Length: 243
Length: 278
Image (cartoon, rainbow over all chains, first blue to last red; front, top):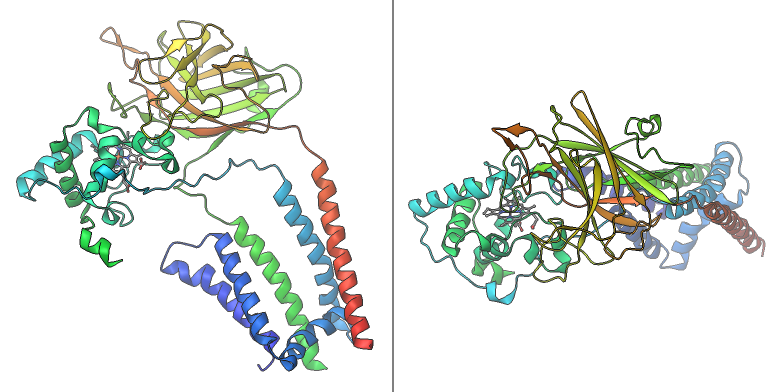
């Protein structure tokens, strides 16, 4: 395979297979728009790379030109050419249609899940030592006040969870409290969903504003019980600084 | 010229594959946040009068319902840990003047205190789904609540902005009627799309609004309703939209797009041919 055009083609197909099928084995599937972006970048990069020199340009574009003009072509190549000429305008038509067609889906809303906390909550430390007693008390309070939504197993699957959008946080998922400091949780629990800034879409959150019902001491102990029960540990200042 | 023919075929199939692959991958994006049945209520555009008085009208059954999960209200006191209504099916229609929304849900007993409510944000201001409760960093707006109770035999048009502020409006615009049959309530709410009352949600075809639901099982247990006040089944915000009148101008743009693409092909080939013969 010396031909640069074929190389570019293989690169693109390989990239697509990698992004769409191989990568999701290890992480969450990529959104289609991102796959599209990466493919477009790969295409642009390989075009530039292969057409840097005059000879490369001819090698790369020559076959495309001959294919498109149909010079000296017959049989399968001729049919493929006609197909390409038909499919391209139809794709453009289809794209126009999907862009203009009234969508039945509400506009996507991008909620920031972990917005910055207000200044007064930055750097607070849990005033209670991590003793078995404190953890047990925290877990008891959690069972009473938090488990209906966040679940007895700390997995966000409490009996009240299905009615809410966004759903109650799943604390056993490494993407929630394991990413956060205890002070951040203290803010979220005290002020609840209505304490979120505008990018957190406070009007949608069912997370209660617990400061009206639970004293600070209880909240700190609940945080302890929450981490223990979910088998996660809070982010520390040292970790924050390493980034 | 064998190699080139091969390349031609390769290029052709490749372009087609990329086109289809890209469209396919665009189309196959997963909806976020788990497998919730629906995210929106659609008010279908129909002609003529709406079946506002008849929850069992055939035209209701012709509509594909949206379905939403409900939760016991454990967000603020007084809480309740278990509720009767677990899911609701919602259908809607409008005729350019009036709208009707029908909620269908299971409740094994018919009781005078059985009740249902729809809640909407009013105007452009965001409001918290819990009765427009106060938000700390965001200036919130009021909510408009359409309430039906079996014993009332009618709908009530209400407003709230914060807990314990709910009250019936001076200008009543909402009608409601319910029919219980074999363990299922069907309740139809209706109203003009536009009311001219600043306390109401105004529904404009083609525009999205926010909607939430609440239900009370009023069955008497030891002389008291099983669910009342803040003890109810709830949802948080979902979306609702009255279907716009179809806009056929878009087909003109589709044809234009196809024509431009075909023209581009034509001139591209001509240009390459000229270059080759120069």
